[in-house]
Length: 450
Image: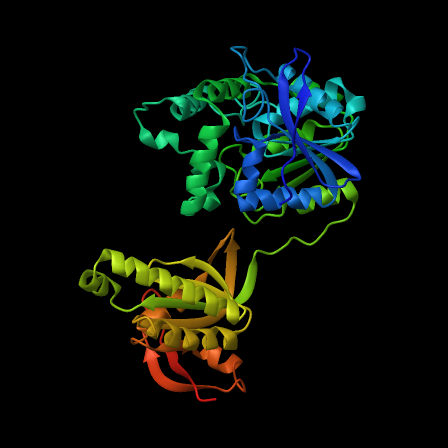
């Protein structure tokens, strides 16, 4: 992602609003709110969010800003956050960014703000994109699709209470991004970014604004072409809210995507593709974070016993030598180290022959410092998760490594098939049951007789 250029707009009361501009245009798109209380700068630390912003900026000049009280912008200063005040700040930002009539894009509790501007300043809004949002959040006699007030109050107070009775109330991730619940690195980022983004008082002010907003009376006055995008299985802001918007906005296009996530960038649903199609009439292909790779796992044999035998300091020195040699060999064979695993390494290669050759070279190199390793290689589809990788191919390579004897490199049948003619020879090691994997896996021992 490009280096973040933070600028400041001056609001009507002289408050400072942090914003950033990314992308060449020709369309201006202002993100009124991203659906969280997290600063826009945090997108650089979360690859899914960063990729989402990059795709938007490929066809538009994207203006993002922190609402009052969030991230880099001035605090609320004891004043309540209101839909009208947020709308005025949005206009100040687009004026400072030189975007007289951009498309407005809003997620979650920013939706009523975008609708307010579109209805009261129609000349300032080229188009409206409403993502997983609503005209009114809470239930009313004439709005049965709303959330019961007591349920929302317990949710909001639990998130900002420093000593909640129910600790589970602190965790809003299952509602905001259920597809990422089992992703430990995402959970860590979510907690840290949320704490940095807003104080408990600001978070509560935002929740109260969400509970108090009701722009249903303004919907008929919205003249801008509007795209209503909603996750079909959104438990935080249910799809009925989006259906209501689509039925009451004069020029609405309504699209429901097969997703459970409230955050449009958390899962695999192509929100950006729908937005691009609506704003430009064309649709770029969604980039895939999955690719085919040769995966190499290595593991130092009996590392704990060896550390105990020679002492911690000497063992740390030996590990440093191991890591240096491993980096050199992986680089030599055109691979990339994904991460150290404590007593080994996970690396990827574009081709299986280079992965196997690297493993064989690692046996020789580490043997020179008195370290014996085992290695496993498999070829399959992996998912890129920032600097890390995931997918069944990673698990298979790890299990193959575990099945290897000291000083041995084992590979899957897929590897032998794809390295035919490379000069690498294999000995059949028969069928193996690999932990956590179904069926019998035929494995082969690699050696190089060239």
